[in-house]
Length: 257
Image (cartoon, rainbow, N blue to C red; front, side):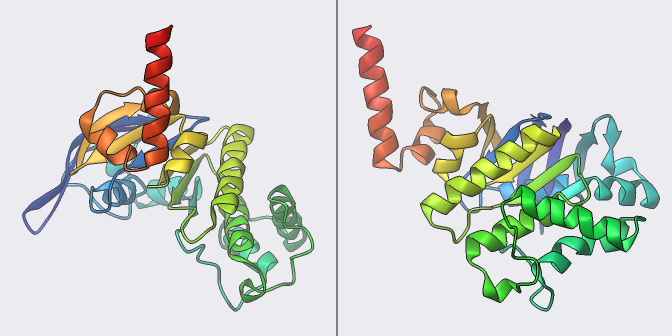
């Protein structure tokens, strides 16, 4: 579990994150949603330690990252898996070498054991028979799968994903969503996903944090999204006519019942 308490962050006198408090739950897919410029990316960067907040606390299972020394921070970061928006695979490395990269950096296992672990992770994301291929030789969806394999190579307790479906078609996006969700359950990770993809929200949104103008405007689940009475959330979500129609049907059904 990750607890965020009264987090505030400003740039050049402009407050981007306003006194945000929330909880990212263990074993669940926790989604941060909001419009572009709402502050969700800044929130994520503060949580993983890429930015330092002006005030507040960020507590990883009882450990406040903001009060850690250098060695403690490095140890915590080894417990984190990161999935970047553009996959961020190394072009000069094969798929297998990419997955082995964090193992080579941080693991004390033998080369044989590291290779075995990397192959296991690739097989877990249905990427067998791609070990010797380079990123330029595989599709965008396969690159994302390889990036997920690399993110879980060190068996992290925490998985952070920044717009994991960016650049993917709707069908592939759903596959990636389901893969992240199943891995979260399988390994009991605390998974935090920064997204504006409403398909992801309705597919795997177990714990949703809606950020508006740097404020934690709403928290809930995918089941509660449709019935929410929060005007700002409605304006964000029901920009899609399909979802607006779904809510209308739900309301009519409830009235008839």
